[in-house]
Amino acid sequence: MTPPVVHSLREQIREHILEGIVSGRWQPGERIVERRIAVELEVSQTPVREALRELESLQLIESAPNKGVRVRNLTADDLKESYPVRAGLEQVAAELAAGRLAEHTTALEREVEALREADLTGDGEAQVRHTVAFHREIVRAAGNAVLLHTWESLGIEVWTTLSIRWFSPEPRSHAQDHQEIVDAFRRRDPKIGALLKSHVLSCAPRV
Image (cartoon, rainbow, N blue to C red; front, side, top):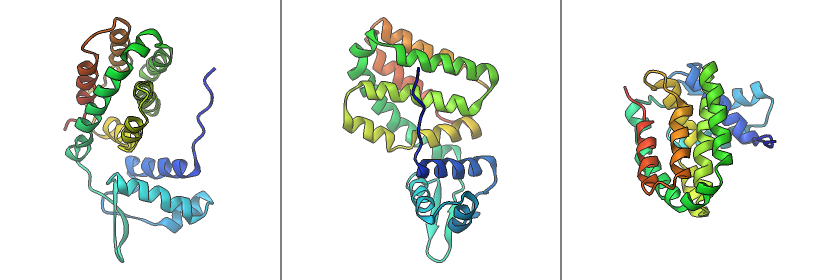
């Protein structure tokens, strides 16, 4: 049985704000008031401030003296900037993890099965969650703490959410795309790094 995922208060608040931006509750240029969020969620302002700082570091929001925090006017080009960096990191991860994942694909298969269900039901939130979990398993399997930290610092969940919800082209089979990667690990494909890099780049948002 997969253990439940426990999110910190900061992460829960970050997801709340992100959902508000994605859903249009806060429009580009609109101010996000820290105190109002704290009152709404019945929390102190400290974790709200931490969540906002994280979103600002990802350039999803911006702050200015005497103007507070506002939603950036993001375009597909803004979202695309992180994908070449992420693709390069995951290429290295796949090459480092190839031997280990060739023999142990259970964690990857679990995420693919969850993606099949999400594809069938059209559950966008689950598609994001299990897509990110799949790729995290590959990076973790590389056994390189610096690589994992760098990858996670890109805010993969945030950009994947926005890419799928805002700029995704016609519906795609997330499960099938990721099953092909599992199959490549199993057969010890010598081009697994290039394959994963190509896959990540293909997920970049298109106008």
